[in-house]
Image 1 (cartoon, each protein chain N blue to C red):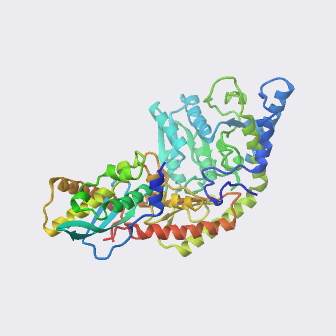
Image 2: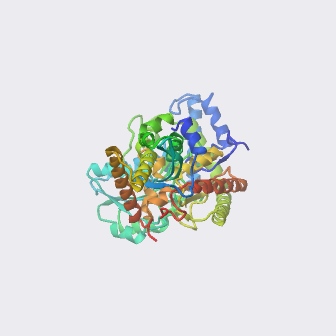
Image 3: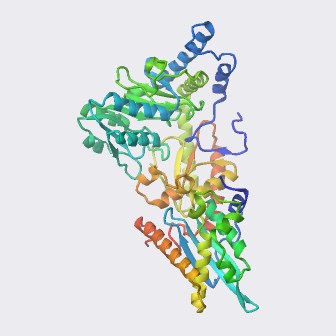
Length: 159
Length: 397
């Protein structure tokens, strides 16, 4: 059901776990099943252009969710923010040799997470935010709210 | 005895069991020279007939019933469909109400749902946090027009053993409904005496008791009025047409013979393994939650949630180490729906999402328990180190 590439990233995920002092973080979720991803980025500057100096994910989800997180860090590392903003679900699936159809959107949250982290960074820094990125932010917020609603309903996010 | 072709631990015996080498040996002649149709008159055919009837005797012996109360079918799914649809159609003039529970196997639930579309009414009983139905609630749901009650003896996911003896008494005292139990998980692990249980109908199959796939059986008490599902040549006393699957039936018989001899001892061994598994997991891994009863469950069945660890990921990580297990996580199902059994316990999506079923059987050893626990410690630790949830299952802030 999963490709060799998915299994490899799943078994040996890259750039996963905590990051100390990230420049921006984001959290995205999937309301259908409760998958959760946290994205951490450090932003550097080279020749007057901002780029992803470091990126990490923390992921609660299936093999596909872990593999997409891992491969996203490889795709985004070293890219300018504008380039990273344009990494889409399809690019991630292609890099993994494809995903089962049913997992295409469900587990493919990592592009979402990456875009949201960049949005937050740009907002914090007072940088220009494109209409496209604003749209992506709105979608990420909505799905996260729904995810948390589902989780709260079952007492999972209360203290 | 080498059962597996891989170096690992098969711990998914509630999905299916390996074929016992003695069963395979008994089947072989019927895959080779003894191929004749048991309904043929010549000597060769009579030999097949004799083998089928001997197998029937062995299965009847295991269930403690008469040989003519055993109908061979193609699977437990077929037996369950046969009982539910067959009773509904044969007794529709008597009534149109059926009672079952929310944690039955999909084949029971889907057959009932189909009947609802045909004008029947079905009551799906709730279960408590450990998966038990309430006999008093069942009593309240019985009606004059109730024709069938179908409650499984043990649950295939969470190992809950329902109070069937008590329940059959209530149903028979309070109604004229037939009582059916799906006990596919039970042979070889616990007592399966249909007389003691007091049931009218019972479902089993061979591949959950170290026999082959593709053969099931139905215990049907004499003189019950049930329509057949398959019409044709009138085999199985008119209950189930179609040429008998002789090799599989012979294997089923041999498997039943071994179960009859060994179930007490094997059940005890499985209980000990379960005890050790639970203690080792709870002693070395934090934030786990047992799904189903803590005590008295189906021997060899364990269902436990490792909070913060998604089930499909854990199953695949364990598979990489040669350990076969199962999960009720939505991520592992075709429709992305979590287990209806775990959902019915009312514990929330997190529990199903992070559930793992470990089920041992005849060919597992205490060493397997250690291997599984070692692997779990490693993989749970690793997956928790990259999870976006903390170990209580909450998000990080």
